[in-house]
Length: 234
Image 1 (cartoon, rainbow, N blue to C red):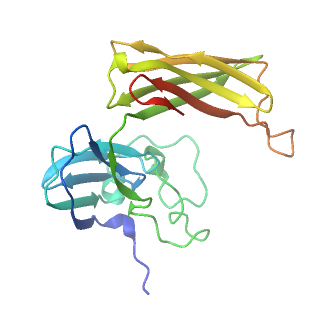
Image 2: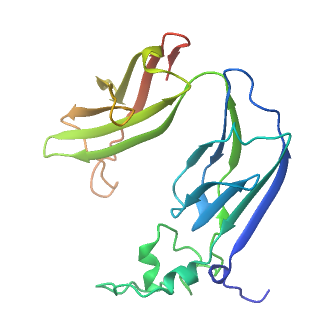
Image 3: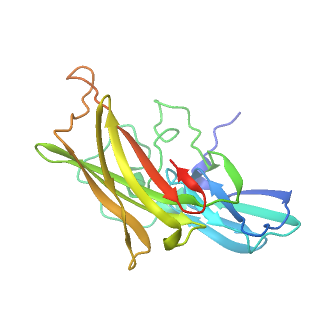
């Protein structure tokens, strides 16, 4: 068909679904695995989420909003309208990109590089949306930040437990393994932030290299938690 600039318009998505209310001790959440790009979400007329990063995943508690019949609405706002606002010019011009101001957004350049990819930018839900019902605690908002010194690897880890109180957590740790190597450190609770956090140091960590420059050394990160009421969870 005729070329159409998907970034020039607002796009609305909606669906209706039936759902039973949460049972005793049950948590119910909507999981948005990816929304492109300037988006807002309503459930039954109530705003529950606003996002400006298509690469983030969002988990929203909706137990208090659920009805027997539900209406979910998502809007993806026009990126062109956002980019029309005057901003500082980039120091270097990026070849092939249709709009140099895209650097202000966390979005893909696919569909926005004329002559290199088809002119069809992703808009709206580009990854699955799930309704999650859980009767046991789970880890949410897990953050892993990786860096390195001249000798060691550093993994800053923080997380929150949903459906579990502080006293329910017998132990929680983060581990990094590669082959027979294993480094582990327990997480401690920060009452100020309400999060469990720790810094894991991997002595003599092997860095990842492109195959043309060395061995692509990869480590597996794992959360190990034991709850007094539900046992071990990894």
